[in-house]
Amino acid sequence: MASVPRFDAGGVLTSAVILLFTACGCDESLPPRLADPNAISVNVRLFSGRVTVQNGVAGGNASLVEASVTNIYTEVLQDTQAVNVRCRLWLADFPDSAGITTIGITSLTDPRFLQGNVLTLLPHSTALFDKYGDFTTLNGTPFWNMLTLKDTSDMQGPYKLSDPVQVAMSDTVRIFKAVPDYILSPRYYTIQFEIR
Image (cartoon, rainbow, N blue to C red; front, side, top):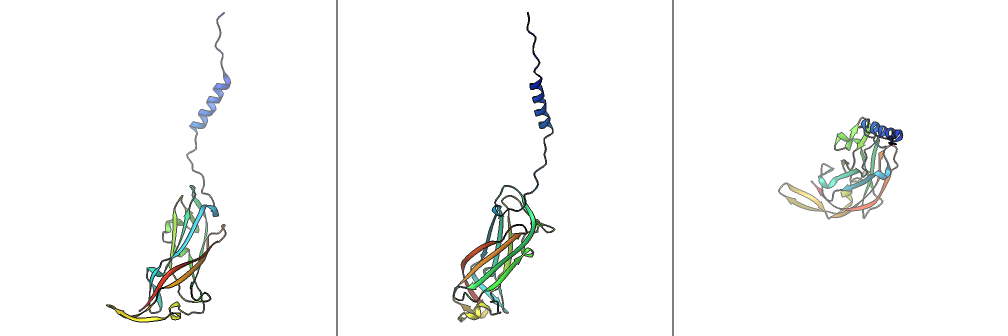
């Protein structure tokens, strides 16, 4: 007696289901992840060097405070921004005479990170925020008025110059509305004030 081939309906059904899922696969990407404090690296720095003061206003690269926020995840992070970087600056020799520099969303160097009030960080991208530091105490005294200044001159004319001094900075950083503040402990930078 010849054997009759058997029809395996279960195997055909399984193959059909797999084929259906493969054919109808979704090309849509996952929605961006809401901001997660573990997904963000925050750094704030003051550029060391010479701060040039003209007409009572500090300028030059050494007076620049830069906050950077990096998405260290492999997913897009997106949430309502609440950028508020509060930098407390003081001369190391005068710890009770601090000033405050505040950096907000208007200091964002690349506007492509912001759509409306939503900040978007692509995987491994870094958003930078730059602002000139305010080297003035809370009672309005410029830091250079607390230092000994030497008279000197160059091709541009006479000016006053401080010895190199240590300026300390600590920070409280808020980036996203739903993420708690980051607290950065004091770091020290060498600054020299040139008063023109």
